[in-house]
Structures are given as structure tokens and as C-alpha cells.
Image 1 (cartoon, rainbow, N blue to C red):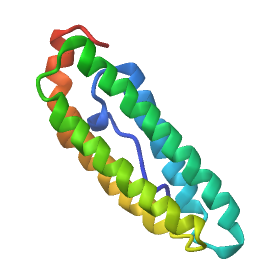
Image 2 (image 1 turned 90 degrees about the vertical axis):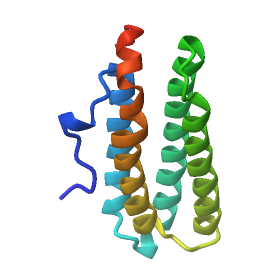
Image 3 (image 1 turned 180 degrees about the vertical axis):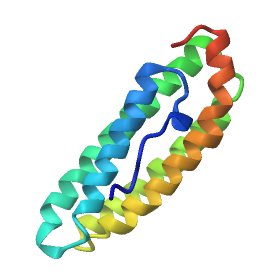
Image 4 (image 1 turned 180 degrees about the horizontal axis):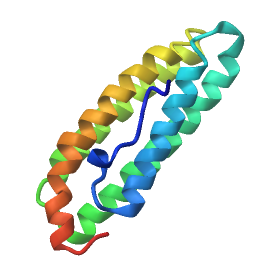
Length: 134
């Protein structure tokens, strides 16, 4: 059973952002599949690196929209992004040092991503709709 399942309630109504959210979720599911087995440490590190790249890219997408359309809560939203990136950097270092906490990280990110979409991202849905961002 996948850790992250995309449902319509997670949609923010912007195709590019929804696609990026789904991609991050798929990477979480791949990380979860490794089940934290030591024999998969190299694969775990690669997957986490890819996940970090995808998350950074996604945050850049959102933040470009915030800047371009002058979203009033952009600074608050960016702070959430920065906090997660700091946590990811910390987790990445732990994992690189031999602690493949991939399963723990996948579960943490699942909760973070779902909550972030349903609270922080949903907060911009109406604004994006008014700006005709689809």
C-alpha cells in the first residue's frame, strides 16, 4: 500500500503544482518501499537526493507565482519552505553518515506534505484562481 495517495482534495487547481505534488508523493512512496534496509543504503541516498531536488524545484515554482502575482502571504509560506529544506539538509547529512533513516524521513515528509498542501497551499487557492493561474 502506498504511503502517499493523491486524491482530488489535495488539488490546488494549478496543473503544474498538482503534478509536482504528485511527483513528490511518488518519490516518497519509492523511499517508503525500501523499508530502511541497510542493503539499500546507496539507493536510499540517491532517492533522497532526487527528492530534495524535486522539492526545491517545486518550491521555486510556487515562489515564482508568489512574486509574479504579489501573493500577500508569500513570506509566511516561504518560511515553511525554508524550515523543511533545513530539515531535509539535516536528514540528508545523517543518512550520508550511514544512518539510512529513509523510512522515518518518508513518513515525516508524508505528514508534512499532506498538511502543507491542505493548509498552506490551500490558503493560496482562491488568490491563484482570481489571478487566473491554472
